[in-house]
Length: 69
Image 1 (cartoon, rainbow, N blue to C red):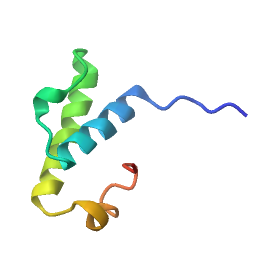
Image 2: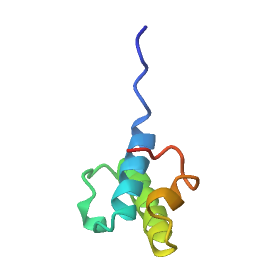
Image 3: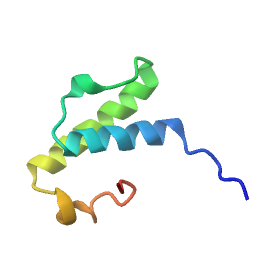
């Protein structure tokens, strides 16, 4: 059975969230396409907010279960 590819925007959001939660800079966004960059930045902002709130590691799993490493 073939697996469907995941949505590009969802992937961009998840990668941005991972970058934000690990403390990486927003300048690390890999995409120059406007729509993908918006999703990446949204994920990055939420990830940074969670990092500042102490939602890293095991304490942050319940926050966003779509982000699994």
